[in-house]
Image (cartoon, rainbow, N blue to C red; front, side, top):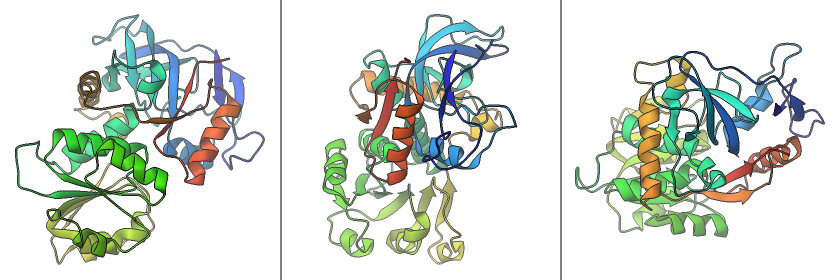
Amino acid sequence: MKAVGYQTAGSIDRPDALLDIELPRPVPTGRDLLVEVQAIAVNPVDTKVRRSATPPPGEYKVLGYDAVGIVREVGPEVRLFQPGDAVWYAGAIDRSGSNAEFQLVDERIVGHKPVSLPAAEAAALPLTGITAWELLFDRLQVPLAGQGHPASLLIVGAAGGVGSVLIQLARQRTGLTVIGTASRPESRAWVTELGAHHVIDHRQPLAAQIAALDAPPVDYVISLTHTDTYFTQLVEVLAPQGKLALIDDPEPIDVRLLKRKSLSLHWELMFTRSLFQTADMEAQHHLLNALAGLVDAGVVRSTVQTRLGPICADNLKKAHALLESGGAVGKIVLEGFR
């Protein structure tokens, strides 16, 4: 089967950073599905792994997490899917990825694809959708709309992939006032289009900008990037007994600053359930099905902003470079093999 992989971790500028390769087609066992991959999205985690994780000598590392495809074969213990099902998923960080024509994935982290979206548009949503959902409802335990008291959610880095879904979920599923940060005109316009009540500039002091808004207290902050840079400001703007969640890998932060306000800190990694085979691993299957329902109901939209053509080494290099430049808005997708 066709695939894209590498043998040595490093910069995307290396000639061998990503290579077009041929690999054997895998065979499903246990609860695995064999999925024929139709479309993928590229995420920051792809670039982080490519820079840092070198496979064993002689082997290739195949990246890729977001995917949409068709189930072609199932393992003997599969009970949630059958061959021919259209599916979407975000994969597992410790297994071979979706930058390949065929991929094995555990059914417990797979959902039925939204029927209303083409493959490429659907591929933009699984990883960011799971991350956004788990941030809001598992980590921060935000009440659903009509419950709880008036409060604001501040999203730092709201124009990216996770932020793009967070805005929509928070607006449609909670009663929170959503404040997103963005600096460039195109990213501010994107955050506004997705439904944020207010957009502020993270290059300027946050507290003064938030104080100037007609918004409830900031009970929740979700920091999606450069948490170490903004940490003291986030502590400042959070209301007493508020909650701070993050997904990035910041330089050391002084958590003692949280004590005076009794603030809590929450980390989200959507790969945790599959990495540790947790008892509630199947929650991601149900989450993805629920997200597909919201998409088909017109409540959540795809966050595709860049389409780079077929899945091949050259196009994946372009995607990695764009993500590493910091200039990406929304999601980058690729579709089909050549």
